[in-house]
Structure formats: C-alpha cells, structure tokens
Image (cartoon, one colour):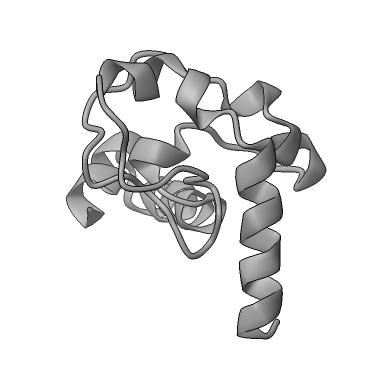
Length: 103
C-alpha cells in the first residue's frame, strides 16, 4: 500500500472506531493520543495500563477484518498478538505475561 492508501484506510477505520465507548478507554478518564489501536501503524496505547472490559468484538472493523483477538489498546495489533500466542505456546507460558515482557 502507498502512504496515501494507508492514510485513507486509517481515516475509514477511525470513522468506524468505537474505542472511545469502551470501558478500558473510559477508565483513562481523558483523551488518548490516538484511537483505532487495531490499525497496524498504531498498536497499543502508551497511556492505557488497566483492562476494564473490551468492546473490540462488537466493532464493525473487527468483523470486517476478521480479527480474532481483543484488547488492542493494551496488547497490540492482531499480528503481534498472534505472534505472542504462538511464542507463548512454544515456550510454555501465558500469552499475557509474554505480551507484557515485550512491551
């Protein structure tokens, strides 16, 4: 994809994004630096540290992109989570512990 195509796709994702209505986002109690944490150029928030519930599964982008994971604001993009799941299984430890160590 060209930078222009990426920018256009991000604009579309942001327009459909429901991150601001999520309990985890609301727990931050202020605007974050960005939303659409599932977007490959974005990833996990630098500000959100506690998971308080997740609405990723009901997001229109989630269904459209056939995502399988959640908590993109704290755990990173889909590809990072899939990689972490595979590595954790290989090393015999929990995925969440694995993701926290790589942050």
